[in-house]
Image 1 (tube, rainbow, N blue to C red):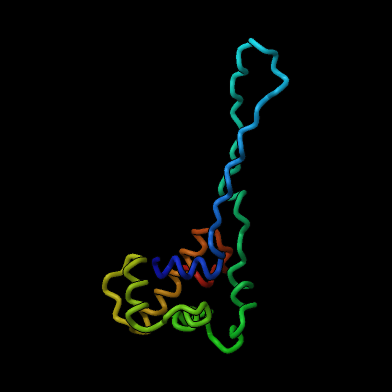
Image 2: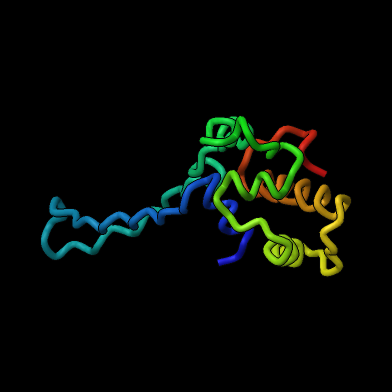
Length: 133
């Protein structure tokens, strides 16, 4: 699993596929009559199906949030979520998110934190504007 996938799962929870409804038989149809034509049913949009997760409140409510500066530190964010935050993990995360020249500098870490928050927002999270790029 990707590192961003682990971050997303830690915040949003693991996606659970809803089982498809079982087909039902219409027993009121007269014998020998042609079957009724299928009626298309509206499918709920993915946005309507998945509730919006308030990322800030969720992270604030996690054990240890009061001791970690997850709001600005990618290392502390990863620690809060129980994800390895060493240089190699952060470099792999940066590569996943489109940056191949990650060096681990303070500027790179700020970029990585903002990029993670932006991706959480794009994936259905409610993220304060000051956290994203």
